[in-house]
Image (cartoon, rainbow, N blue to C red; front, side, top):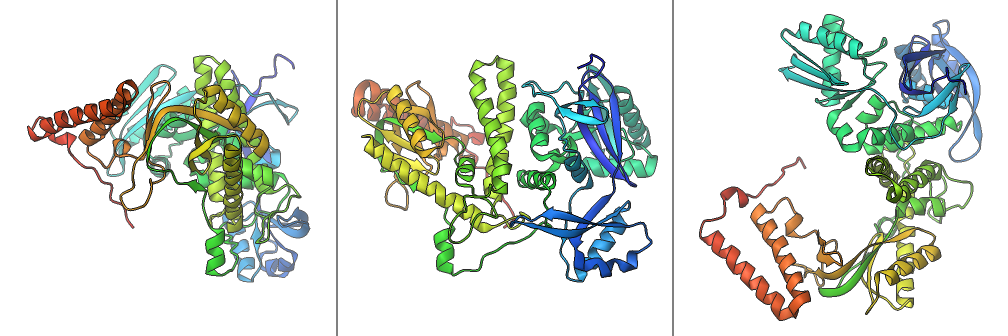
Length: 582
């Protein structure tokens, strides 16, 4: 590669008036805009041609195209294009009122553009002669310019703004026009690629529209309101990091602003849409609601969650927690579970399902980051964690979103088959555990707690490896408990699920579902229970049950004395409850 050719990355994309603009940041260089001719469009069945006659001579382009169908095969469609978004919407509504289904009609135009160009934002490319060539990924995020923007608003009016970028701080206050215009000038001067905003992005977008309308202020680099830069909420960027934002953009094909605004369910939708467009599918409109009619009994049998092995009440010694890694995504890939492969009778093994295409690359990428972590420096480990964590959220959502009615491809049977197959996996796991001479103490969806007299960490690791090899899904030893307790349920026989406490071989206290980790209990009670558990386990190991009971009584009497003596501050006894609409 010539030293004069610098890698580029996509930071934004926009479409208007028959032109598409892809905003590129040269790595270590200037900002460029790559322009191509592109008009938005929708697809409709060929029989709708006559209903498009009223739009003849109004700048529409109509051509016949062949597209793949999710259920299999292909079909011919009319591709209706226009430079005007409103004109295109009017034509789509006309054919829909006539009873024709439209495809690709509710998709964001820049998303269609990027899928056509096979580009994903925040990924490095080599641009030569108008052609983009992928460059190998780096663990470290791309060296983009990131700014922080604080805005202070009173009754919808901007009063103060502070922009921080590259060590520079620009503070603006006064009349709204002065602050807005000053902010626009500051963004031009500092020219950040990503702006982390203190306000909710929806509120900031409304402010930006107001400033454009009243003062002609532009905050982006191009014609659009925020075009050419990425605007994300500061809390989001702080939570997932720039590396996590990169993964979000690369997984979905969305630029930073669009990717940052979407929930995880809508990110899954974006990934599905991008892949379908790239693979030549006709994309149905959202809210498809593909529902199978069946009896209530059949629905009850089919619509069940993960398998739970209810624990016995009591304290157990030398218990290992074995976890399947990304069980649901692995089930999707292993058994080819997808919207078009499932039926009431079973799951087709071929062809490879769309949901597998959605999940498999992300799953492999996430696991590669997890395996890398041990050999990395501290800072590199942070980047790997940010990347794998964001991929984990998208993968988990791919499972949960699979049966959602708002999923444009939603098929409840997909979700049900994932659960059904995961239950089979867990049943086979329990059987294997017992065949190896271990006892199942507790099981929850994708994890199993097992014990065996005098078993060592190495024994438990070997067991996890044997299960993984037999089942075909990676399994790891999460931790070994020196002691673990399952408390009695208040209204059920046995112990409630997802509720236990224990101490590991390393001395780590683990509390799950008990009062000590619940926000709706007073801080005094939470701290007392944590100290009580710690004291009991400490003395249980050193002096047995009688010593543990004596330590518990001593702690209880001491804390009760403080409570009745008025020594506990009132804020330590406050109960917090969140009230929601429902």
